[in-house]
Length: 266
Image 1 (cartoon, rainbow, N blue to C red):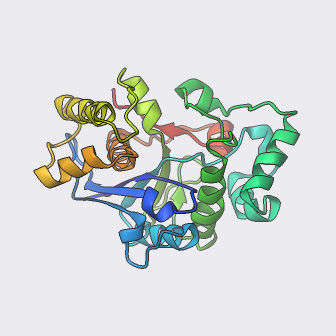
Image 2: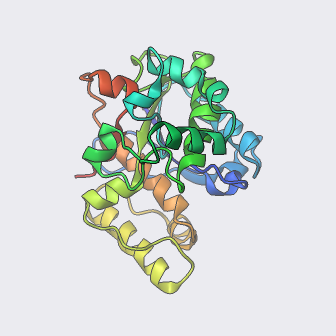
């Protein structure tokens, strides 16, 4: 059975505590979460982003029949890609943008300070563009330290930018916020108050009621509700989005260069 990973990503200084990975097996119905943990708890993990993301990469490729949904932008608007194809863009990313701040600043310089969005951002209502102040570190770490090394090693296929190949894990872009917006259930759920926990409970119960998720066992349920950042719950939402995505073969030049968010839980 196809292994599914839902990954809530982070580019924070303690990214290993904020990157969460939910694991399940693909089904035609609701998925059952077999495991959900932060990257610091992976084999060889750490709170430091370089080490945590390297551990995450190894975890993704541990099984070839894997589809991993990662919650960060995989590309830039097509006019900013500045490469013949997405693979060239990814492989040259860290030479072009040497650190997160230069990535943020150079993109804003190129657009005259405008935060332009990809087509998928506009159509699918992502909260921020790829180099927004609240997201640019995730984008830089995600493309430069997770996707690019895996592509360089011919270890994965990133869809729809690349052609899928048997025997290679597939990585797709997901967005928990887009999924919740589509479900018309996007309360303020990231925080430590009872109100925030109640909002996480509302989301979790909706996922179960809509037959997207097998009711988790008590320990798993409590962990998803008690995780104050909502990262564990976002990872589960990502896994559900992967399970419900057809990953169809149709794609155009925008998909191949800018990517596409897979988020629909409808």
